[in-house]
Image 1 (cartoon, helix red, strand yellow):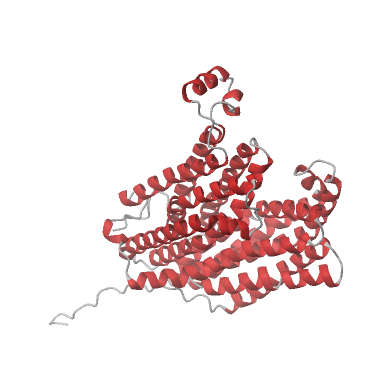
Image 2 (cartoon, rainbow, N blue to C red):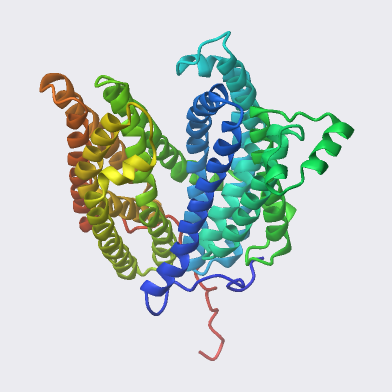
Length: 494
């Protein structure tokens, strides 16, 4: 049975709203930044192996990220069900919901793992990797290794989602930090071995490096070593996470019986999680299609778009953190039958997001060329910088709208209205974005600038549509019922 609030759980159903929103959201923002550090560490060390290795990583991540987003949507169900049951005071239901969500997501990840491992070569050919090349061989090795570790990766993701619904975002942050440190430490050894290990050389341990290589002859696993390091570090985090849940030290206290799936709970997990999976995978699909449109304007435009999207993803991290915090606040308050407080939380998150991104947009606009210049050097740099600066000046002016859109989407997910979030995700990131961008590039011959205007227009329109539906208030019904107190039997003398 779940215990009290838990050592780090935040009370979001009473008192002020802004403070608990920040307490919930800031650790999520930092966790997302640590995820970026994960990827940067892999890219840095793999980069020591040459261009073919870096290309292999790029091909592999296009597939791995899509599979991760498909399965990660189901972790949203854990956040929603835990948050709303906690807000409703149904503490006895939380353990069963949490355990079954873990069982469902891990089972799903095992299926993805087996299918992904088998289909990896075909999937890589589908996205343009050329069979028979060094890049293709490295991509297959990395992708298959990552698929083998998918259950460990999702073991951590579902822990993060369950604790978020409970109101604790700091414990997942600490586990992510542990994973990043472990990954950074073992990456160079698993990738490069001891013969050519820059980590040992930087520490002045060249003699030790020579001795270790003489003793082991270990040359590293190359690109595959990066995947092994990621799986190992995630696996450690996942094992600790399950241990914490079984011990009850984080508020949720699981027992073996809680992992047994029931039809009612599975139905809720699928009803909430499937649309969230579609919504999340829509983002990666949208970027892929837009990249194909940008390619019509040339390779330099693609490079500029890649840099621009990288900057955008960093800029909106605070909005994404507030959106996840909003999920918890909305979920618990709807469970507590406090829809007006849930709405106020969304307005507060939107206002903070707008204020932050307004300042960021101004800074990006004024320094667009310098920002792009950080990411590229070489003969083609001037053209890429000019095109990328146009992207940041045009799209950057709509960062406020993009950030508020993420917050409103978080409100829909927190209420369990994941189908609504899915619809607005498809409309905003596909329908409103791609056809106008195509028209501006092909029919009006505006080149990459046409795509930038298409993206900017979509950012504005999608928040207007999503916000209009939000103001209707029909999304606040929730998905769980508050437990009723036992009916009192009248005494004989009543």
